Image 1 (spheres, rainbow, N blue to C red):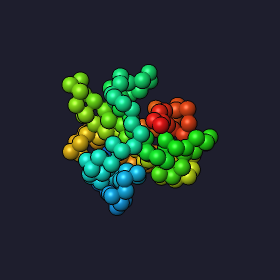
Image 2 (cartoon, rainbow, N blue to C red):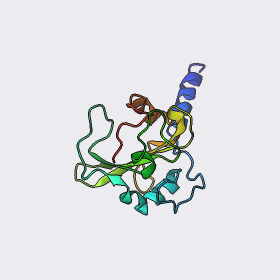
Image 3 (tube, rainbow, N blue to C red):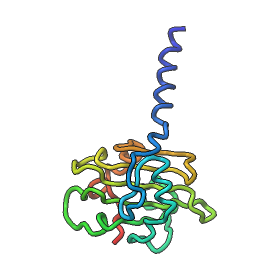
Length: 163
């Protein structure tokens, strides 16, 4: 019986790590340049299509080497696309990645947004999930699902900047 306690603890921790996180951070859903945070709000913001006015790659492309995503297309907001300095990106710098299924339809979105001036993965909000709120993979600041790979990016956890 005592051997069940450690197993139960592992299961509880695993479930907590897979939680969808907050649905809302009460961000402005009308800001065309800064994505909202939280499962419900970020998907509502994406649904409005604001990011489609950003600097976007022309078409979906196969995943780049080392990427954990399938075919995708990335859009960068003005704060990300316009930054040409070294070090950390400015607050509000953000990108949206459309992630495609084999049939060419968007199956998920990945979003990252700079939320503090500090360096490191905790200075970014990370989201990855399907429209409709199902299958949320990441949702929160410093989410290890995203920071594990993005830690190897050439600048401040960002692999690709579209200009």
